Image (cartoon, rainbow, N blue to C red; front, side, top):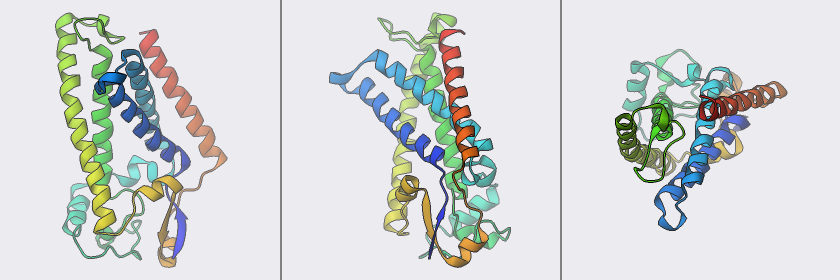
Length: 239
C-alpha cells in the first residue's frame, strides 16, 4: 500500500470552515440563549464567500477538486450504484481508466457523491441568497431586503425557513454516507479530508493523477478567496 495526496489544503480548509460556519449559523439562529442576528448575518457572509471560492476552485483548483473530474453522466452513476453494496471495493482499480469496470473505486469523489456536492452547494447558496432578502416583521431585515417589495421579502423569508429543513436533510444524508462507508466498506471519508492523503495499492499509485499542494495553488487559492470576499462585500455594501 502507498499513501497518495488527494485533497489539497484549500479544499480541506474550505470543507472544515464551511462545517464551522454552518454550525455557528445554526447556533446563532436556533439556540435560544445564543441567538444573535448580527452574528448570524456575519456567518452567512462567511458562508457565501466560501461557496463563491469553491465554485472558482471547482474550475481551477487541484485535480480532485475540479467539477470536470467528479461530475459524471447517468451511466457512471448507475454503474456505481449497482455495485454500491458489493462486499468490497477493489482498491487496485484506477478511476482514471476509461473502462466502465472502474466504477468500483474512485480516488476522489465517486459519481453519486460528486452530484451530491453540487446539490449541497446549490442548497446552501439558496439558503444564503434568500437570507439576504429576509425579514422577521419586527427588527431584522436582510441587507438587501430594501431592494425588493415587502411581499417579495416575505416570500423569500418563507423560502429561507423552509429551505433550512431541506439543508438539514442533506446534511443527515451526508453524515449517513460517512457512517455507511466507515461501517460497511471500512473506508474512512473523514481522515483523508483531514490529512489530504488516501492509501491505495502501489499499482493504483502508479496510474492515478494525484494532487500536490504547490506555490501556484496557494497563490491561486489566495486570489480566489480574496476575490470571493470582495464580491460579497460589494454585494452587501455597494449593491
